[in-house]
Length: 191
Image (cartoon, rainbow, N blue to C red; front, side, top):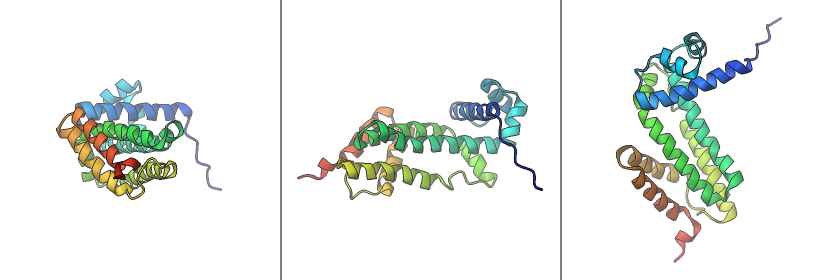
């Protein structure tokens, strides 16, 4: 009779979450060279706990990246429960820019993950496309957003806005989000 897989204890799940939170912050701020022991210490766990959850640095980087992306994408549906579609879309774009800023600090770390043979971007596009589609569909339903815009259109434009965050200023990025929202709103197509 096969053994029943053990459930992960709640404290172990909390430790994993804390490690991912700290790792994402540390990788974004300090880069890839931060010692795993420093990440474990800042998370309030032992280095053995870190390696139990993430046997390699690349596994930790990959998990931190995926967790951040998932959180950003999940915000789309959450924002729609509290705001009209156009407002939720704008707020989500701000969250995406925060994420893009963090991701740019993790770029060297993500390259190390890719070099190890793992593709951290494999499901990223689908997650982002679904998040944007959720926002656009809500905007189509309430009449606040144009219906002739695709998630790919928005993601392409957001890529440019994210580039401005990495190579320009946050104020410039805000102006670009304003322009993008002007283009997305229903009344922008009226003559």
